[in-house]
Structure formats: C-alpha cells, structure tokens
Image (cartoon, rainbow, N blue to C red):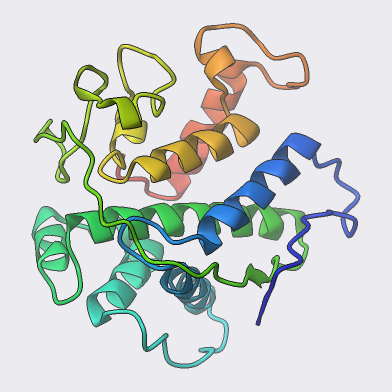
Length: 241
C-alpha cells in the first residue's frame, strides 16, 4: 500500500526526533517517488518495496510474496544481495549484474541509491520501534537517461566523477570541496543519489559544516564520539567499506 500523505510526524514515539531529520525524510520520499535518470518513479517505488521484502526475509519474517513484475530479475536479485548478502558482493557479481538484461552500470547505481535510502530510513523507524512509513505514490514521468560528463575509472568498480572533472550541471554534488570522500563519490554515476545521500547524511550524521571541524550546536555527541559509534556499527554489520 502506498500513500501521498507521508508526513513523518513521529508522534508515536517518545524519542525527540529533530525536525531536520523529519524534513530530510519527507524530501527522501519525494525523491523516491520521482522519475530518475534510469528508473521510473513506479520502478523506484518497486525497488523500495522489494528492499522491504528482502529485509523481512533477513529478519525471519513471513515471505510477503513474489517481487514486482516491472523490475528485471537482475534488479530484484541485486536488492536481495545488497540487503541479505552484502559481505559476499564481488567484482564478478557486479560485472554480471550491470550486463544483465534490463540493467547497466547506471541502472545499478541508481538502484543502490534507492536501497541505501529506504533501508536507512526504515532502520531509523525500527530503532525507535515504530511502524514503517507507507511508501509514497509514484510521480509520473520518464527517466532522463543522462550519464554525467567527466566519468572515469578512478579505482572503484563503477565509473565515478571526481571534483576536478565535474561539469556545470553536477558542480554542486560535492559542495565545492576539492576532494570527494569515496563513500560520496561511489554513487556519482548517478549525481542525484549523491545529492540525496548528502541530504540524509547531513541530517543524521555529519554535515558539511562539521566536515570543516565546526560542531553544530544541536549535536549531543562530538564528532569523535559519533565516528566511534559508526565504526562499531559498521563492524557489527560486516561493512565492506
């Protein structure tokens, strides 16, 4: 079931959820429902729904049923691989995935962006022990099918675009920094996923202001404390990166 009334009010928890977080979640739902460069809004919602199905299976919950018919088989398998078998993602699997029917390197990176964001927001809800927000209704429209300029092989499996190679249309994705961290550059084959990641990253973890070493006043934990928590969570999740 989907809805257009995704308000992220957080009235069903006693934990104080910052409005900047709720606002970022609302923007994420708009981004999720919108047509991308390689997937339609309906397909992006289907990727998100499949992500929730994969999460339920990982947690031992009943199988909610077959996956969406509008997604290529390789896309459905990729979602389950990323959710349930991330430590075993290999270069060979990546190459097979992007060359499968209905897929490409750009399709995969945009799919990855959707998975990262729906999973992150859903995990936020699970941590607060509240119901997941209903998925939004898709926004009609066709994908733009535009690859960014300046993409190169920069040491990662997918091609990426670094700050010195940015075209004017992507000039904002690294917020003017001369060096892009690997975790941000990883999705630069789909620039909107970098913008999306930055918006959620700023609200939840570390803003561009704090990257330049200025602690934002609403933070309770210092940056070193947050880095320690993040490192521990990454280790427990067997994070490849």
